[in-house]
Image 1 (tube, rainbow, N blue to C red):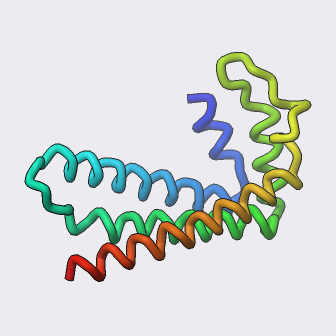
Image 2 (image 1 turned 90 degrees about the horizontal axis):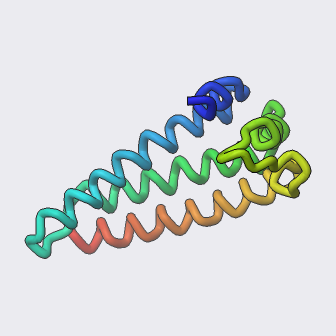
Length: 127
């Protein structure tokens, strides 16, 4: 619960993008689980479009972090400094550096593009 409170202190562009990404991730996770549990050998039609939506939200979140829009990368780096998962202190780690967060955002956007391309290809083959 402490992570959620810390996340709510982020500035608006990154907070909204992060919440949207988590919601889409949850929908895609349920979609993949439903596809696997159906056991019919068919692909759930929601899954490829969900993967594309996951890629789109990843691209937007990555670009917000990479461009440091309204101090998003600096705020995200301070979140990493303040939040101590399982008692591990990352305040002196390179993960808490805004430059690393910006590089991570660029890589996240790049991976998001591949998710969008892959989801679109799979969806077009289903049609």
